[in-house]
Every structure is written in C-alpha cells, then in structure tokens.
Image (cartoon, rainbow, N blue to C red; front, side, top):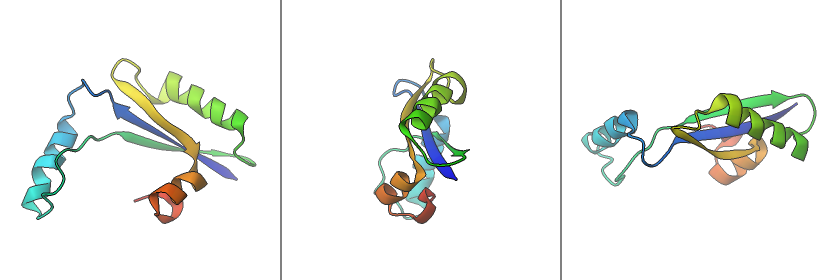
Length: 95
C-alpha cells in the first residue's frame, strides 16, 4: 500500500490567526528564535499498490478540487510519503 502526502497552506496575503497565536506563544516557552509561523493542513492519502505518476496526478487533482480552497489556500506539495520522510528526517513523515 502506498501513501501520498498533500500539504496546503494559506496564501501569503491571508491572515493566519492560528499561526500568529503559536508565534506569540513560542517565546514564552523559551523558543524565541522562530520569527513567524504559518499553520496549514496536511493530508495523507492511501492507495492500493505503488505511488505512480498517475496516482500523484490524481492526488494533485483531489487537492485542487476538494482538499484546498483555491481562494485562500495554495497546494504547496503533493509527494509520496517515503519522499516526505526522507526530506524531513522524521520516520513516517510525521512530526
């Protein structure tokens, strides 16, 4: 079974109250090095078999028509979960 990760973020010009709240709280927790936070959404889609180019194209289409609101959000990534784990250095691609 394969998995595809889809990440969606608010467009830069859209206010992000959740991100702002997190950014405000971090210095109070001794984590003041972070100067900004944007909060988005992550979806993991499972598919029977391998993640192929066709599967990624279908996931991108799902992201455009269902998983994001194109007025206020951008789809920033559609990738196999294995690639996600390799780039984040976190097993399974989750934090």
